[in-house]
Image (cartoon, rainbow, N blue to C red; front, side, top):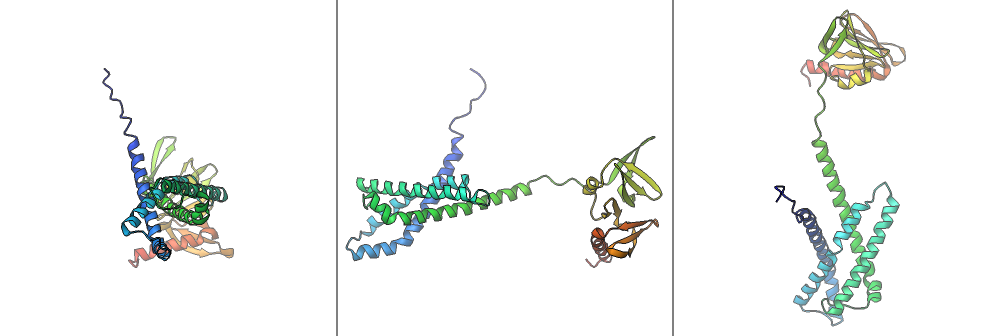
Length: 291
């Protein structure tokens, strides 16, 4: 005999059976509430016609009808999962669900007539008559269950998506230093020492005081790795260290220029002026302990 343990073929059906049982229980509860809502009117009409049932038989009739309605729940839920009504394929999915509700309505009424003929459920055995009399009401009840199924389906999907977002891996930490290749080897530049960054063709120039270091990178990719509390874009090809800014001077057309601690003047595009001004004001309030 081999030492490899064969999987139990019954095990994979466990979750499916539990889900089926839960769906049947949901359907039974839904139909019980629906029938209890209609029961006072039915009892009054039956009493007026002299066809009222004893309370015990009335309870058995309602329980049997609830269980019969519950049988349709797994099919209705499967249709909801397969053809959800949303912006995509709205009309097609709506038509499929409407056809499914109609088919389930016919199936429930046929089943109730068969049970009545067998003596298991008080009622008529006339299928066409029952379809004409009770068909719209049963279809309405099934449509309500489909709406409830949609609410449960989309809420479960939102919860699952929220769980996936919360379980997503954390973002990469911001860069603290950048290795720069030189003819003599490798130099590690600390970003705390960088005053501003300038695009030069396929390269970026890291300005550290009077020194300039070139790296092969794009400003857009590097900006995603920089701490936004420290660096901000001043122009299409320029990133500046916020704590190096000493003066902001307005120019015409909404543009401005900024003076850095080392005396360098940089053009500030009007597209980024508001962003940098806001960050500078927040940093100033933070330094003053106001926020």
